[in-house]
Image (cartoon, rainbow, N blue to C red; front, side):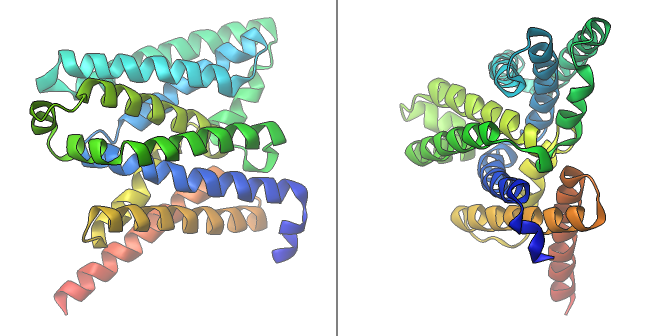
Length: 272
């Protein structure tokens, strides 16, 4: 089994997967605690429209997907502020708009023979075909995301647990929220290339759900969610390679299996 990792494409897959497995739960913890878990799913669908646009433009699809995601993240934040009592409307609106746009752009790409079939690698993920350029993009964006989270850690923590108190305390809530939304968009667009649009939100949310079962502090939840993400990525990559299955789907199913094991163990221990 280990001989698989002697191949360059497997090494690139492992490196890209590890970076995504760290960054997705890191950004996802704040999303879940702010009850915004579905934002990642909406942004993933927006990224798909961006990929289709990139293929039409004959540009790097991840870059166009990132631009679309950033615009959508800012748009959803604006809608969330406009509908404070119905914040989930922002997700529904963006999902509807993005899927409509994706369908239109994909149909145009198909008519023009613009390689619309390649969109499947972004729809389902393509760990085994990660290129050196993908690694540079994922690594650069990932480092930027982690550094920004570190710099804004206290502000994000304050806003996450009590946004109104943070605002009264003089924190630049609007600016921090905008930066965080842009970071979330970057993570989703980056992860889309590895695990696919259909499952990217699972890698953002499920390891965090695992951590919240057992963690006793925010830092503990952060560490456990990242660890669960890395474990799911490693196991999923090995299993998908051995059984010739779609890596993205196997990774997320592995993350769900880890969650079920942890939740089951907690329930049994509680009954004992």
